[in-house]
Image (tube, rainbow, N blue to C red):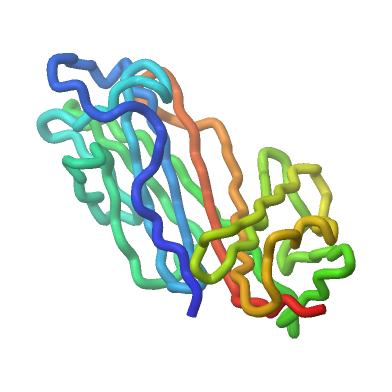
Length: 219
């Protein structure tokens, strides 16, 4: 079964030990990833100083962050908080609790995407109108379709962000460079919203749903 593993994010710089940032300066970024191929959910929280490009921060003292009342584990190498869940979690609640006990709660909900029934092969000599399985695009959403060789040596990426859209157009030239045979189609649906209650200077909420499938390219 095809699946994508979430392995760290590029938001912000890694921790700068000599900079002491108060929580009133935190920029908080919440992520909720789900990989349908792996049936794997991963909530991740990153605290940075002043904005999304600031240095990543480790929480101080008794401050902590939870998802569905389970405390996220700090990763000292990536300087982020994460939790691994071996099931689909369609909706959940992040809660940051500061040292003084003040709580800041943000709810996040997934929006699924998948492949239509019997989508098993593609004619490389024709344009492909790919209709995903799931709701039309909403505001602040983007859907990305990546087509990759099974060894990931060659890939093509297309995206759609028009509100109300239900498809992605792949022109036949999009298959140039691919051989006939199996490839991996990977869908990524991401919605980005402004964070709600937070201790600092704001932040973002990202919900990301990933679905992948092996498809045969044919003449």
